[in-house]
Structures are given as structure tokens and as C-alpha cells.
Length: 264
Image 1: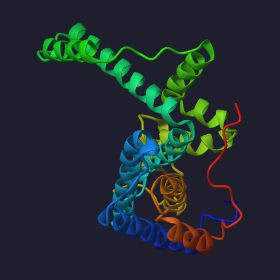
Image 2: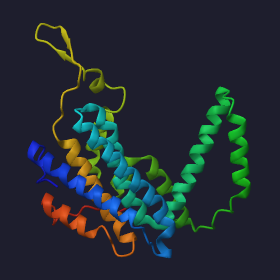
Image 3: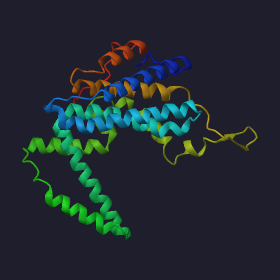
Image 4: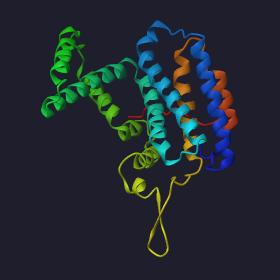
């Protein structure tokens, strides 16, 4: 991906490529999807994450067309995160789905305890719903010690993006996520985005944050390409393959490994 430079020409190319990938996704969904039974359980959450990725990317592109800059960072961060998570989910299969479900149960329990602690009116209703769901839930599968270790590791990776990347030997891209995070939270980066420090020591207010280049659109496009590359093989006929291959050719990424392989 090193041959994608952060300049206007590449940004325009990336925007056109993103539009083509989004159009292809819409077309595939509109005509109906057929998924082998063996892949159906994994495909459910994968599809939802992919759809979120596409819709979020589309929203971000629309905002940049309207002149928004810094405000798009949280959306780009979400797309970036989910693109790698989709590959993680496909790669780890049913074990990843089990971890996702377990993590969801843990998160709902934590939320309920917080609601109970702070005295929210809906806490009792949520607790009753959680108790009912727990009573109806099948007993967890019996796992060997190595299977349980993997289960706990996958649960951890869901909430620790750096560790997810590190397991795939691509922790080098984490600074992108970290930078986008600094533009998504209460940081000095956001505290200074709409003001300019003048030479005389005064501050000049800005109505809009300055443009950060075309990296956001380029990153969105690469993430869409990664997500499509992980999702398409799950669907009968690999229907996104033509648009993926065209995007790779347009961006000069034919020899690039978009989806990392788990190494630890």
C-alpha cells in the first residue's frame, strides 16, 4: 500500500474506487445472497459488520464532499477497525462467533450492573431480561484446555484492537488507528482544531477545521477493499471478485496482501 500517496490525485482515484465498491456491494445485496450452510453462522455477524462498514464509509464520503474534515475521523476509525475485525471473524470461524457472543453477554452484564449502581429506572427490567436469557441459554460447550485458552484469547482481542493486530503481525498499522482515536476523543488535537495560534501569541478562531489531506478517503477505500475481500468468498460464486480485482488494478495493489494471516 506504500504506493498510495496522500495527495489529491490519489484521493480522487480512491474516491472513485470506493464508489465502485459500494455500488457493487449494493448490487450483490439487491440480487440476493446465497451462503453455504457450513458458513452461515459466521456469515451473519460478518454481513452485519460489512454492511456497517459500507454504510459508514458512504456517510464519511458524503461528509467529505460537503467540506467536513476532522469530523469524519470517528467514522474512518470505525471503518478501519471493522475491516480488520471482519477478517479476524472470518479467519477464526465459529470460535470467533462464540467469543463474540460471550463478549456480548459480558458487556450487557457490565451495563446492567452500572445501571443498578446508578439507580436507573430501567435497571430492574434489564436484569429480568438478562436472567431470562441466561435461563434459556444452552449450556456452554465443553472445551479442552487449549480450546478454552483460544476462547479467552479471542474474547480479549475483540476489546483490544492492538492485540488483534499484533496476532496478525500488522501492529505497524496501529498508529493509523491511534491517530484517528486522537481525533475522536477529548484530546489536544480536537482542542486546537478550530483555533490558530498567531505569531503575536493570540488565538484566531476558525469556523472549520483545516483539511487533513486525502488520507481519510484513501484509508476508507483500502478498508472497503479489505472487507470485500474477506466477505466475498463466503458467498456462493464469490460475487464481489470482479469489483475487487478492478479496484486492485485501479489502485496499483495487485501484488499487495490485503488480508493479514494470523501468526500467533
